[in-house]
Image (cartoon, rainbow, N blue to C red; front, side, top):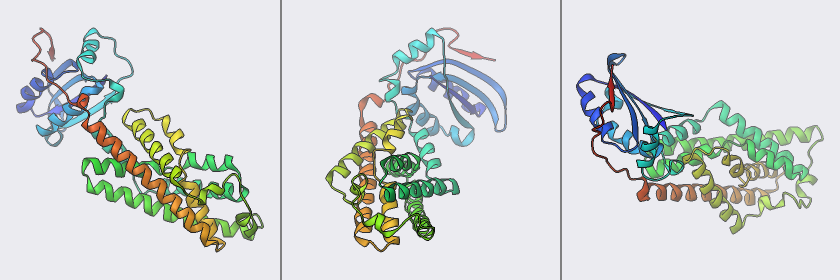
Length: 321
């Protein structure tokens, strides 16, 4: 269950209460007249089954509550109530399958920020991967993949395409392209510095690398794996199963490809630079394509369409202070 708290103008309260009472998946409706000060109005609260939230928020926004008052949603770890159990049973579908589009838009917007922290993580991941490439050490490469923060902007692009949000597309593309460009420039400088200290040399990039040589040899399997990872990553975001993202991160060759391209360029090994660039584009494209198709399917599935229930007639369905 999720907890919904609204600040509602007094002249809209009855309409909002009627909406909540007629919606499936709602329970524990409470109305506190006149307690809100900024903005002024009534506070209306209720608990909502996760699978019923998205369309309810859409209806509230159509009433203008987000402009004239506020809409706040919180996760509830534990709810012990027969009424809550009935609300979850009445709501269509399963809670784990429900997509909260407003929450997803907010999350991907935050994770697509072209910030110092984002660039730092991406640059550090790329430098770690560069060490793994030069040492032909798969463990370092996998560790670098786990550190990379690039899935946020990738998910932002997919979400923005499905929700038709051009500003989020631009924001995510800027974070993705600008972030990788800066990370690769920093990694090229890092390679030159390591070479100056005798820790890197041109022979390391030219020698056969059985563990990491695949990075600059993209093929259709690279694209297939990226698509599968894109589906898994998107499902992890929409179902709040964030632990899956680690597996997604270490499945795709984005950061390692950027690292190999940067190091190869620093040693004028342009064939590897081109191959690594193709690997990077194949993985980024596969993730975006699969993520977009996954979200389109989730949006179209009929189980995410809410139904309405008759207004509650049980005495005490709402409590007024």
